[in-house]
Amino acid sequence: MKAMILAAGRGNRMRPLTDRVPKPLLEAGGHPLIQYHIERLAAAGIRDIVINHAHLGEQIEATLGDGSRFGVRIRYSPEHTALETGGGIFKALPLLGPAPFLVINGDIWSDLEPAGLHLRETDLAHLVLVDNPPHHPRGDFALTDRRVQADGDPRLTFSGVGVYSPALFADCRPGAFPLAPLLRAAMAEGRVGGVHHAGRWLDIGTPERLAELDRLLRS
Image (cartoon, rainbow, N blue to C red; front, side):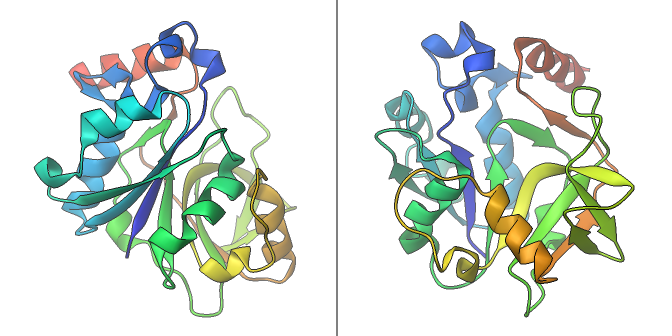
């Protein structure tokens, strides 16, 4: 399986930290955030990684290079302006190939093991859901018998980790667009599976949460 790390966001909530450094290169525990994803993917046997970037993307390429020092091969999908999650994945499809692929938001941290994530043959997506964090108490989706639904209770939060079929993007066109409407349409067809990850997960969306992760990793 190939993997994609989403790294094109501007990180406005992280300013002024992201004025000169792209958010994926902000450090916690002595390493850039994106490095933890790369190392965990490599440990899971996932060697082909695509990274999209926009804001200060040249710094990401200069820091990570071709990925050889991590034991992986990295290819880049540059965006002149950020294309949102859906548009960014769609642009990268030629690099990801015809098989299902894993996507990870670059601004999260988790102890999730990606090797166990798989897409059921008839599904378009398989999502990892987590307990609702304090800053997102209402959650995103419901999970019942490993099937994800747009409505229902109890609700969980989408972790930013998922496995997708290229067919999920079959009717899309180039440009900026969100991923959520595609997922909700697939849920309406009963074609989205999921799993509840009860381990550690953090959305590194603010300087305070970055500091929290730094403390966690250094402890």
